[in-house]
Image (cartoon, rainbow, N blue to C red):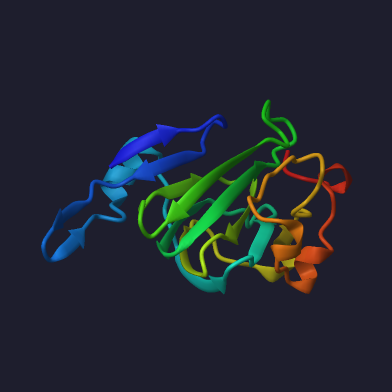
Amino acid sequence: MQIERTAIEGVVILKPKVFTDKRGYFFESYSKRVFNEKVGNITFVQDNESMSTRGVLRGLHFQKPPYAQAKLVRVVQGEVLDVAVDIRRNSPTFGEHVAVKLSGENKRQLFIPRGFAHGYVVLSEEAIFQYKCDNYYMPEYEGGLLWNDPALKIDWLLATEEIVLSEKDQRQPLLKNMCLFP
């Protein structure tokens, strides 16, 4: 497993070693030992999966303390643009983001520590997205950030009219109006 650091401390891209032959491919998608060695000692407690079609944007979501979540995300089919926004108020990178293309083809994964809002948009006709969380989902502690907040300057790689949002994601607050992580 190769680790690529990003511009924001703690957010890393994981590139697995993929073995291919005439039968197909094999790779180790997760090893607690390797992950702890190369990224940090995280105990994941929940795995989630979603399927979405082109233009669906899910996010930007987070869980408030004490139920904040770190996530390890990947795409098993299709392609997405995955985005992590630093919402730690005292961070030197507060309000900045990392955007990475994840796909079934490149098999990259993105680790997002606690204190980040997370979202993705589907770039292919369909995508199956999987992620591990280090804390359980608690609906009363969920938070969100408006996907097109001008202060964030996120290029979602699709035209606005192509974006498909839930009602909840259409009404999320701007970063400047939020009470966030310390």
